Length: 187
Image (cartoon, rainbow, N blue to C red):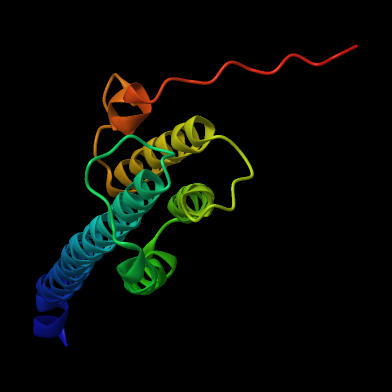
């Protein structure tokens, strides 16, 4: 029994060392796995956000072209009337499919901002289709602000610095379309 008692401290040391090594290795592996997963999902979110933005830009471009055929927007590139419905439908279908990825992968703030952006683009589309409920300038400003909100939310979700000038994310057309004077209420 005496030899066993003499070796007991060494045996306990080996057992404690093995347990500590196992615990440390497991924690390191879990942390590495979490980092790999975060990078993987960040890449997927970046792809989803950029593809959605591209689909939105396509819809905006078509809306601007349609508005120019109606004389609402001074643009030289127009969509011919016989191609506007299929072109718009294809772009809307693409936006819808990209939207599903944003819903699946996006944070709550990004989803809200993306929905705001496509609601603003719907307003632009309605004006371009001749179903005006507001002025072209108001709709352009709404799209511009909603676009900025989407990009800021997406960059925040991805951990990318937003930058010092939030206006840099706004639509360039918003700077070219003069704001219409507000109508004064009659007493």
